[in-house]
Image (cartoon, rainbow, N blue to C red; front, side, top):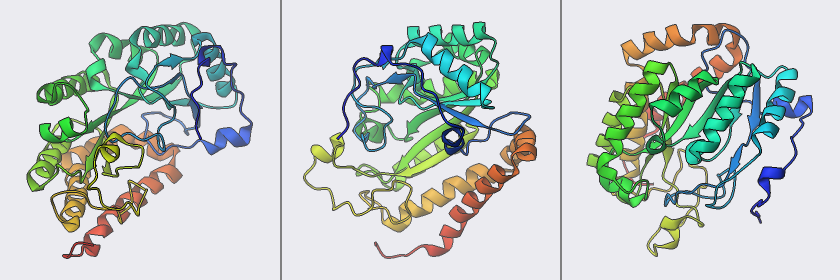
Length: 319
């Protein structure tokens, strides 16, 4: 049972043992000319949005009301982590841009602190603009993860991702372009296989993922966990036997065959990461990362090769 932490603002700084710091390792490639050592920070709790696929089984926090930790406390935590050799902070918040005044204060104090530490976060495109992104960059933001979900307006509506699905990708393209100009890496998150998905919607998602100027992509399979809105409002969902939304053995809920969903999953990754121009750009951008983080880089390559091998496991029949 998870309980909502109401008095989050007055919570004390969290101190970590060296073994605990070492536990928090992320595989995101960062433009940094040194060996990465990650730190984990939760600056806010709650998310004001109600995406229909969202589950508390995966979220970092609970509730729809935004609560935030005192900024001074956050700076103290970062200083303690920095003293332990941490040089990149992963803000694990469900939506760091959910409270812009708070985020502006956090960024300003990070700049004033002189810590000069890189950081990553999860954000929403409809909460960002050039002003806040510029401030985030100045305070050390190196990579932002945006949940873009789908290239289809119908699927976006089904996900309750935005009140204006027809404007979603216009906003996304604009924000991605701004991030590119500020040298903030952009990782786009997408979901395949929803009940509204078919060949056409998957094709739209593929085109958006490949052509939108993203630096990195990450694909998930649609999984209607029992606490999600889509599961609670539907009586027709198939039994969920696989709870890992990255698993190749996902339960298919789409209008396409499972093999077709798997095909698009592999196709998008291949066309994105093996694009010659993007491949050369990635080598240029991440050469220092690879040089100083060979183990992490090797792990990323192995993960990608594993995805490619899935091509040979397609089953024409629905599983």
